[in-house]
Each structure stands twice: as structure tokens, then as C-alpha cells.
Length: 314
Image (cartoon, rainbow, N blue to C red; front, top):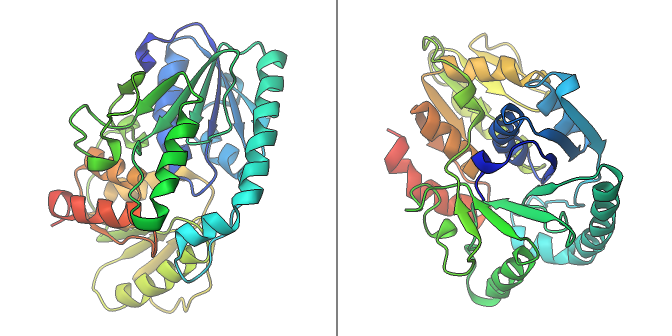
């Protein structure tokens, strides 16, 4: 089953709450499914709802407040250790989420569930779809067992949608499939497919994203670099960080309106960003010069930076 085959259904969708990339890549899917006369229910937190509401009229979607996965990152960049330390809390949320989904499925008479990398967001009663670009987690050594757990949890779903093509052009080894028979490559998804090109009038845009405290550390390091170049640099940030605002060539855009931020990106000659997969899909869609900087300790982003820096970045 591909997205274009789904019409006139009641669909319950929920994106993972670790960063906003999962919300971003769901936007084109939501748009497509709405155009195919489906009724869309979005299970999300308040921050995710704000973003989605930028792109769709309120009457077209039904929002259901839904708790995210509890997680905190430390400054050391030991992402795997952070996951393991909080595994009990994550497991508890996984168990409670399954019960909540079954309740929502009955309450709203849902036909199909779509989970963007939320392992507990499925029901054995109806078709449940898992969205990912990582069939294989880039882990080695002692942490390889987590890839086995990852695949086992995906098997709870009837269908896997992979955000890549059949050649794994964009995610590389992460999206190669030798495990799941019910696996469909649905191509890359970017909200920038909504727009027409704009004239490039901005020197560069720095996109601050990802979990705290790494987002703030990224902001601070890029602020120093931007202060030394000519031309205007826009910083797109989910929140307003403190900084010395004497430099008129540095402008911070921290509003909740993503469309305003999108237009800045469309006008930019260069993007500086974390090397998350949603960003990779955006850059591939925009065909724009970029500088990719992985979040410390995130093996996926380190792999994607190496894979795509030569391909997309000058």
C-alpha cells in the first residue's frame, strides 16, 4: 500500500516529538491524504500542533492532544547512553501509548494508523503504518543489539513506509531493506514542495534545530562564525536565545510562523544546518548550497553528513 492508494478513510497520524523534523516530513503526506478525501486526525503535542496549523486550515484536521516520549539529552553528546539511561521511562510510555491508541481507534472509528517513528503508536485491530528512513540503525559493537530491538518493534506494524527511493539514494545504508516484506519506498518528502522558487537575496540562513542543550550550543558557535562574514545571516530558531544584537548583519527569526521562516530559506543562497534526514530531504528538494554539521554523538547525522556533503554542498 502506497500513500496514493489511500482514499476516503479515517486516518490517525502521530509524529515523533524528538525535534521538529518528524513533523516537517509529515506535512506533504498530510497534504496528499487530504487531497484524496481522507479525514485526518493528528495526535500530537501543543508545539507540533502550532507547526501543522501553519499549513492547513483548522477545519480540515482534527487535533488530539497526545503526550510525547520522555527524553533528555546531556551536553556530552552520548546519545546512545542517554537512550539507555531512560529506557525504563520510554518503555512505560510505549506501553501506555498502545492503550491510548486502541482507545482513540475505537472512539473515532479509525481505519488506518500512521506512525512517524513512534514505536507504540499502532493497533493490532487495524492497518498500522510505520514511517522511517532508518530500517537499519548505524550502530556497532555493544550497541548493535538496539538495531535488533528496533526491527522487532517495527514488526508490530503491518506496513513500513520508507522515505527514500528503491536505490536508497538519500539515506544510503540506513534505508536498505533485507528484513521486511511489507516495505514500500515512498520517496523523499519535503514541505518545500509546496512552494515556487524565490529570488536569492539572503547570503545565508542558519537553521537551529534538535534537542537542547545541543541546539543552543549550535546557535552560539554559528553566531561567532556569522559575525566574521560580510552579508546578512538569518538565524531561524524555535526560540529566542540571548545574544549581542549590535551586529546589524545578524537577524534572529524565532516566530512560531513556519511559513515566514520557509520564505527566508527560499531566498537564501546557502543553508547551514544540522545533518538530520528531514534537512537532507529539504536540501535535495531545494537544490541549494549547504553546510551540514552533525549533532555530537548522533551516528545517523554523522553518517548523513559524510554521505551528502559532497553531493549537495559546494
